[in-house]
Image 1 (spheres, rainbow, N blue to C red):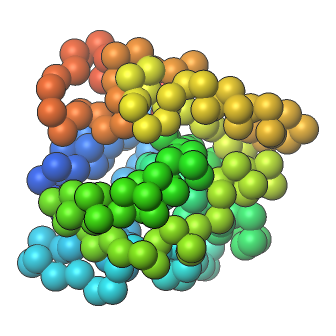
Image 2 (cartoon, rainbow, N blue to C red):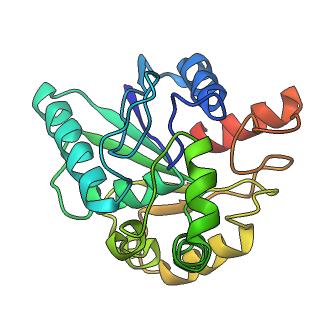
Length: 224
């Protein structure tokens, strides 16, 4: 089984996030994955050469994701998608519009509330656009109008789906997952996991530390 990682808004090539993806690549095989593909980058991500194409927005990210998924489908090998943050919206946009016969499971970590997206990318865009560059991504006024609320997409997912967050996530609190649960109560494909204790939006965090046990619980929450 392949694991395909849909990254969040921050570039996996950025030092603030590279350890997040290194952890997943090194530890996911313990859960039966034969390979881990973390090569996806969205338009707007600044690569390791310091170059970005365009700015981050949903439509162009979905186009990149669709191309990747079509290649996987043609290969006729089962795969799981693990999506982080902004990648949750990209992945749910794909699975609700494409026929993906080889997709085994969709795992969503830290799916962002639409209200948070408005606060970050409309109300506080100037501040967050500057911060975004430090996280390896170009953002501008194009991002928010491009978004479809994950709250509207999630009830339509046709595949086995796991939704999870960290108990210390400042962006995606456990209470938001309870709201999503209430919106998806008629969709039996979806499982909501208990919030992973001691961890936030990124594991390991950009600042501070987590214990080995907290990392283990995070991985178990994603993959068990």
